[in-house]
Image 1 (cartoon, one colour):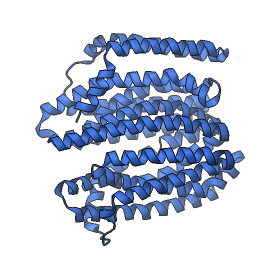
Image 2 (cartoon, rainbow, N blue to C red; image 1 turned 135 degrees about the horizontal axis):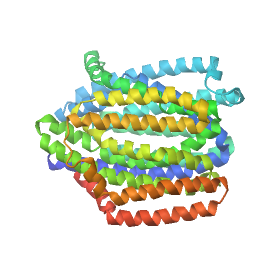
Image 3 (cartoon, one colour; image 1 turned 180 degrees about the vertical axis):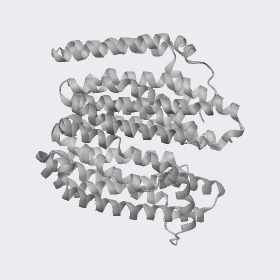
Image 4 (cartoon, rainbow, N blue to C red; image 1 turned 60 degrees about the vertical axis):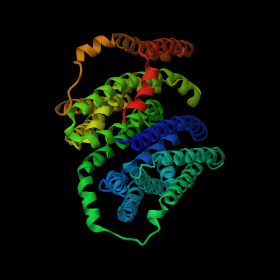
Length: 493
């Protein structure tokens, strides 16, 4: 790759990590406002409704992924007319599809709300439904425009826009939520998505504000490429929405809030890994299969380094969970701690597997990815229900953890057909034996935290978190993790 491409990838990678960092801080503040003003029950209802509406996104025939690839190809060829035809054809189709399915979803929910949520919350649910549908419709449109920006390699501009939008949303929410409660939150989100879409349209204006040309032949080609990924999109429908549906069915919307808090903290850490890891896919696509040695080198460097960074970032997430629970809820909540403990190992493994996913996407070999998502979906639906009956909300989270682990191991096995590991698993375990010891300490410490929570000894838990942070910093210095993060951003491209 020439210097210009390397510079673009580095700029996009750095801006993505920076945007995620700023967004994390904003979310921490925003969730505090939402939970304080709305309460856990309403927060849970909002989260559930969001998840259900966003299932509509899977009806776009996988077009968003196709938009990135085909606009990227046309941009490389310098064909502005083709870019314009792709944007007009794909986005107009998305606008129509989303509108149709949003309308059908509205009809279904209005007529059968009891199928989704307990009768005690139906009135609140239906009151905010129209505004929620508008908000999520605008979000999905903005996402399609965002993928157009990505195809043009303007990810750094996209990140600036998203960061500004998050700041605007935070300001609006701090004003509207105390006064208008849930409606204030939703309308603040609507303003945010209008701003995002308007800014994307502005930066895409040279391609959008032309004579509208619907190229059905080109659209057919894009759909033909994207449709094989549609199975993954459909499977994802049965991930988060099913978990939250089971949580409210076998417990109450309050437990959705506990799950949202515990998973959100760890998802922040995973997002940093994904942002760095996404720089691998274009490199693999560029090299393809004619340079296996270089692909192996990129993979093994990323695999070892990302494994370390994943473990440390998620360790930080689980250590600060009691502190964030105290900040958000005003107390160290038992279910937040136990949910985060159950999710920790599956999330570590899944974030490590993100490098394997990036390689498979880059090679165009998605068979094992499709299989993994189908297995995750089936386990989540079947065992989530069974475990929910037997163990209530804890059973639902355990089922999701088992599903995530199962899917991760399928992907790990699938990449072996295309990649040769530099070391075997025993060598890795010996090399990182201190991390394994720390993981055991962390596991035992969380068990102790759960026992202390039963006895309401919050001071012990906070002291334990402090000791864990000290040990983690020592480990990070020993394994030079801070240097690794810099190396990943600079060299994996």
